[in-house]
Length: 353
Image 1 (cartoon, rainbow, N blue to C red):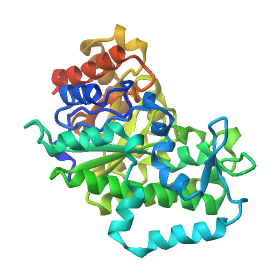
Image 2 (cartoon, rainbow, N blue to C red; image 1 turned 90 degrees about the vertical axis):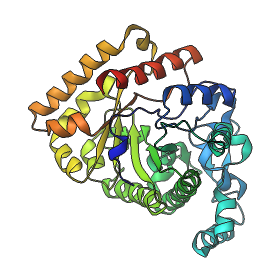
Image 3 (tube, rainbow, N blue to C red; image 1 turned 180 degrees about the vertical axis):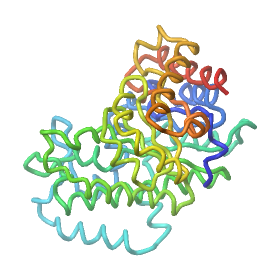
């Protein structure tokens, strides 16, 4: 899909602190009419957590399991592991659309916000709506949250990493197809808060090629289903790794981690030339939102754009190929603060449009 009509619009990252899906949807559609997103509601329980929400089929197939402390691990040392893996890969390769949909659909209890969103969409949209946004946890993040039996992050194990990547790619494809069935384009962000591990002394074995291959498989699944692929990370990252991938939107925390993007400013013109856009997370997803207003946030945004311009980044692209978002999800905040953040985001877009 083309991104042009999304330029200059606002949307959210994903999570909200509400327990009532109706209240969450009211906030989403009141503030982000043009690009509404389905709300993740982690306070409803662990089944709506960042990793768990997208791995229900692996739990059901007993490829992964939960320890009493809530950590997730691959149970490859338990009897029948090889047979369960074989059965799973047979499904992935079968091409059976009905079985595929049944396998990767969210269970009702793990995605109340998603199902409320889809029900709302089936009843029609605000006339301003241009696109529907979804999201899922990325392979590095999931690979660091799900361990092998010894407690090591599963992303380091090629066979376990492959299961994670293929599962998330299939989930991304299913989600993109479902959103697209509402007769509007879909954009899906891959959430990668753990990407900051790349290049650190504590993750020496985290390879660039492995990350790139994992991400590309998921972006390809989104595009093959007719959607636009983005990636969100609310940390300081090696953005050269991201900007060279075949995604269309880079979503970053501009409020706290702009300096990390500035370091890799040389990567942005080629990214823009391939049709990319930046989603500026310029509205803080924290208590600091109470002390900001649209004017102060515009001043911050313009100063950051000017800093990139001085590094040689195209001013035209900086001023046109952008979206505005909160810096991160708001699932851990109060509903009142989440509302403040969403309203600030919408007001900032109105101010700078």
